[in-house]
Length: 96
Image 1 (cartoon, rainbow, N blue to C red):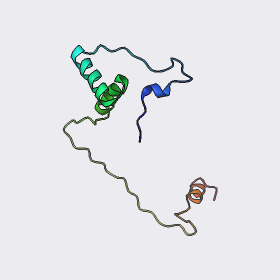
Image 2: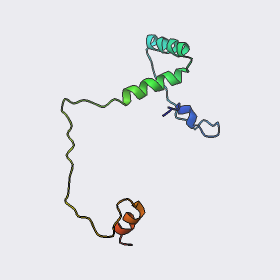
Image 3: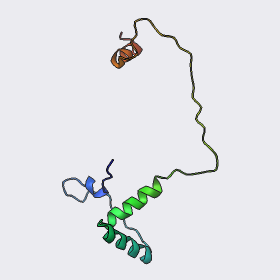
Image 4: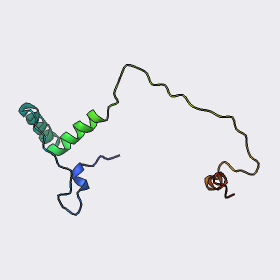
C-alpha cells in the first residue's frame, strides 16, 4: 500500500490541511533536511515517515498477550448453504 503525504488530503487546494508548528532541535532538523535531499523527498515526507514508524510500533509492557477464543458447539441446520453469505444473513436475520 502506498503511503500518501498528509498534504494529499487538502481539499480543492485550500488550506484545510492539518498543520502544526513544532520546535525541532537544529541538529535533528539539519539531518532531516539532508536526508530529504539525498532521497529526493520533501521534509514533510521525511517527518511523516518518521512519525509513522514511531507511532505505528506496538508498546511493550513486558507481558505477552494471549488471545483466548470463545468457542461454542453448534450444529448444521438442514437446508443452510454455508457458502452462500447472503442466504446466511437472511437466515440469521429471520428472513429466510
